[in-house]
Amino acid sequence: MPSNKVLEQKKVLVSDLSEKLKGSCAGVFVDYKGISVADDTKLRKELREAGVEYSVIKNTMLLRASEQAGLEGLDSILKGTTAVAISKDDYVSAAKILAKFSKDNKFFKTKAGFVDGRVIGALDVEELAKLPSKEVLLAQVLGTMNAPIAGLATVLNGTIRGLAIALSAIAEKQSA
Image 1 (cartoon, one colour):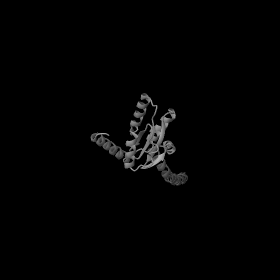
Image 2 (cartoon, one colour):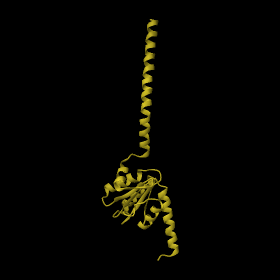
Image 3 (cartoon, one colour):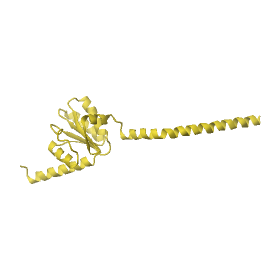
Image 4 (spheres, one colour):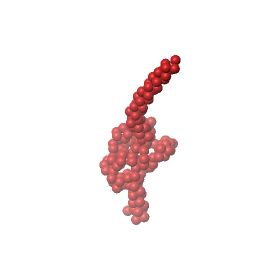
């Protein structure tokens, strides 16, 4: 039986992890078995640059933290080696980076994920990875909203230009 000091440390770790999971908009759980140190270092660097926190955590602690965070249904995937990548503000960056890495490394597999406190399966994580980033999506929406206004401005500008050309032609005709 572990000592009280060790139990307290584990409780603090679980509580901190639970708060991180609650404060994250999205996350991905992966099976990292067989990854080399060089590949792991490269993957961690890429995730860190994207603002994603990646860590290996014992399944029992991850299960307790996820239950405290309200993420239900993870007990079936928390077997074997498990790492979690969480992002506070970008919904797709962790999924994109890990999906790309798993395509290049067949031993690296996505187990599940979560978005806004809802657990999603591995296939849903793959679909999430295909989405463009939040900035691109916002640009597309704004472009779509701006298109009718730009069209109206072009039509109105064409009418004014036509009137100006007609007035200019009349003025030239009268002066001649």
